[in-house]
Amino acid sequence: MIFSQVLLAPADPILGLNDTFKADPRQDKVNLGVGIYKDEAGQTPVLASVKKAEAILLEQEKTKNYLGIEGVQAYNHVVQTLLFGEGSELITSGRAATAQAPGGTGALRIAAEFLLRNTDSHTIWVSNPTWANHQNIFETAGLTVKEYGYYNAEAHDIDFDTMMTDLSHANTGDVVLLHGCCHNPTGIDLTLAQWELVAQLCADKKLVPLFDFAYQGFGAGIEEDAAGLRLVASKVPELLVANSFSKNFGLYNDRIGAVTVVAEDADAAVRAFSQVKRTIRANYSNPPAHGALIVSTILNDAALKAMWVQEVKEMRERIAEMRTLFVDSLKAEGVTQDFSFISRQNGMFSFSGLNKAQVARLKDEFGVYIVGSGRISVAGMTKTNMPVICKAIAQVL
Ligand code: PMP
Image 1 (spheres, helix red, strand yellow):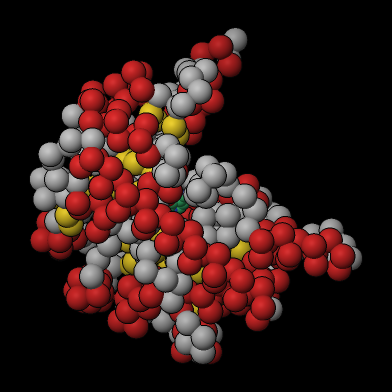
Image 2 (cartoon, helix red, strand yellow):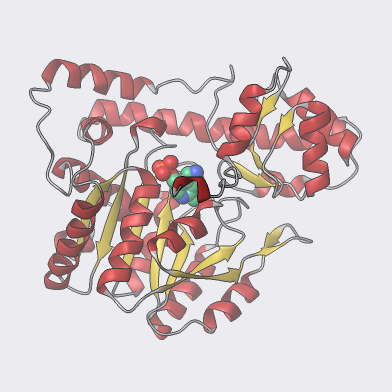
C-alpha cells in the first residue's frame, strides 16, 4: 500500500498543545499557549466594530461572485495606508502593490514562493528564536532558512550585536525576516536607533527585508508600531510585507491578511505584482471575501474606524495591565527571581525563561499550559486566572 508507508507527523508545537488542553478535564486549567487575545472574562468575543460591519455587509452584499486574484481592491488600499501611513510616497508613486491573502501565514507563503520562482533570493534569515511556524512555511515553500541571533537569555533582552554580526554574513540578495512589532516569541522589539542600523545594513548589503507584521496596534499604538517598517522602507529600494488582521481585528478564523511588494519603481512593481498574482492563482485561485470586506468596511467609515481604534487600545492596555499584575503577583507569591523584564516586553507574548522541565510540570501538575520554549501568552491572563498561574510558577521555580 502507498499511504500505509506514510509516517505520522509530529503534533504542531502550538496547535497540538491546544488539543491536549481541550482534552484536559481539570476545571481550573489555563491555556497560555496559542496566541489568542482573551478579555477579562476569558473570552475572545467578536469586536463590536466587526459586528457592526458584518451587519452592514449582510444588508448590502449583493453577490458571492469570485473576487479578482488580488482580492478586494478597497481592502488592499486600506492595508497600504495602515502599513505606510496616509499619503505615503510608496503608495502615491505606485511602488507598493498589495494582494489580499488568507491570514499572515498565507501571505508569508505567497511571499516565499514569489521569491523562489522569480528571483535569486532563495535564502531567508530568521531570528533565533522566532515564531514556530516560520521555518516550516519557508522550507515547505522551498527556501533555505538560516538564523540570526536575537535574544540574550541571561539578560532577557535583545542581543543586537549578534544580530548585526550574523546578518553581516548574509549574501547579497538574501532575505531577512523582521518582526514589525511585538516580536514573537520574545516580546522584545528593536528601538528606532536599531531599526536605523538594520535598514542601513540591508541597504549596504542589498538584503531584502520581509516584514512579518501580525500585531500592529498591540505594542505602542497602530501608527507607532509601524515606525520600524516605515523607517526601513524609506532606506531600501525593495521589500516585502506579510501582514495579518487575525489579532488586531480578532478575525482569527476569517483568515485575513495581505502580501505587499515594494519595488524600486512603479514599473518593477507592476511586474512583481503580476508574479505575485500568478503564485496566488496556482495556490488557491483567489481569496475568500468576508474578512477583507469587514476590514475595508471598518477602515473606510470614520465612526467604525474610531470604534476599532478604541477596541485595539483596550486590548493593548489590558495586556499591559496583565504584564504588571503578573510581575507583582509573582512577587506576592514569594518569588524572589526578578521577572520585571516581562513588563518591558511588547505584545501578546513573553519569553519567561522557564525551562522545558518547568513547563512540563506546569502542565502536568497544575494544568497551566505554555509553549515548550517557555513562551507565555500574556493575552490569555486574566485577574481571575492570575493566582492559579502565579502559584503554579512559584512551585516549579
Ligand atoms: N506571524 C506571526 C509572528 C504570528 O505570531 C502569527 C500568528 N500566530 C502569524 C504570522 C500568522 O497569522 P495568521 O493567523 O493570520 O496566519
